[in-house]
Image (cartoon, rainbow, N blue to C red; front, side):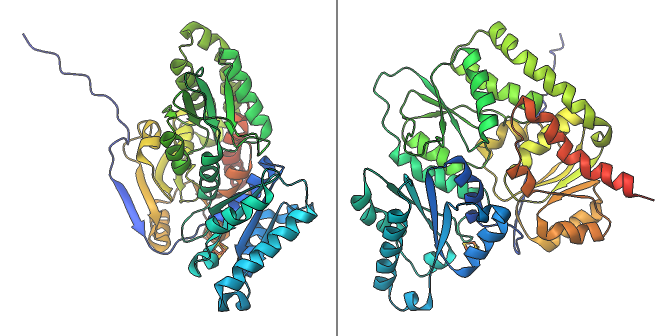
Length: 427
Ligand code: SF4
């Protein structure tokens, strides 16, 4: 008798080799996270301790927002401060006291480290502790680093959220299981996802960050958490260190991604399969219909992602699985193998997965492979357009609402639009 060969499971890129590159990089530092984090936590203030360069970065990244009442600022380290650290500490305390006296509505103050504060070894963790005593319980003072030495772009959010985990209250022993959704989402998207989770029958659900920065959810061994964003490695680790359990899932992009993400929660909370299907069906169908609009532009098109936000792998999976695009190379600033396993398994085997950057070599690969669309930062987009490449600015993917069923169509449109524009302008 001939034994049937075991079925070959399609592993996609699950065990594919990763091209690791280190060299010249074209990425933001983690300070940029402040631009969306301060909107998510309206009672928090972000005080960057850095140089004029850091202030300029925030000013250009935040654009018009700096004209509204700002909830972020830079305490600029002057040359005088470099002369003696003792003075720098005193100066910082003075700036904080003045700020908090002037802005009594602030409930959480983040002291955000930068390259200069790190290089001169200004101990902001100590400063946060020193100042905490004077302002608790009205204001909580927390510290994290958004420096370019330690963080790339969205990793600033990871560092910020991880810094909040120690302040989360301990969940009572034997408490009912609770679901925690981790990652800053626009309020409208968060509301949609919370509604779906509650409709599934999971009543105890909370978010990190919380909209009221002082009302942090509790955490403990009965916490099950879903990551809403792919760049939260340190936050996940900090939650696990407090006993919480990570629910592995693809990220909630597109009809399938959002279904699978919700499914992970449904399984962990013992939700009946039929009930699960009936709750997700309307949103899933809506999302699928919305995607049709962009399919004509995207199907069969080849896409190249330069590293930027760590959203690259989940987005490549979404574009491949749900719109038939062909990923050529998917670059990410940092690859968290465990968190990305469900994404990697769904990418076609021929995809090059790269981590880190040597920008000139990567641009050579862009030129050699001639993709239909290249996703990259603002610094590279126009030069590539001038060479005849169609590009998509990666930063828009971080600032636009793109998660969940109701944003799936808009997300596909972000990629379809540059291709459509190119076709319209082509003579
Ligand atoms: S933190 Fe570092 S990389 Fe970011 S703006 Fe300041 S000096 Fe530049």
